[in-house]
Length: 99
Image (cartoon, rainbow, N blue to C red):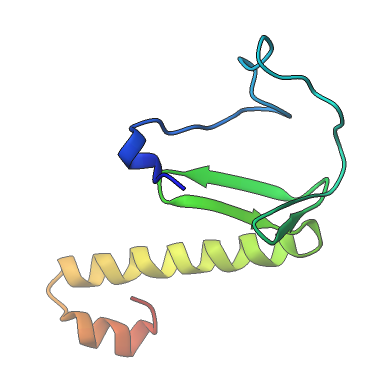
């Protein structure tokens, strides 16, 4: 398996399938469960991808995952502000519990 950076060809899609594959491929089904390398993805799951990889959030826990992600990002912002204001990283972690 090639690493995406070795090929210099990051691949992303918007919507239900890659829009430029029409001459080379054919949609045979949609809104069905799939499995990719042992990870099951169901219709309604959130799929997020960037250059670091792909994340699948099951529909049943999306609210909890998004809430926790927001809390983590907010905490990291608070810690960053504390460090920029002169607090040491270890003290910021001790006080805020986030790094």
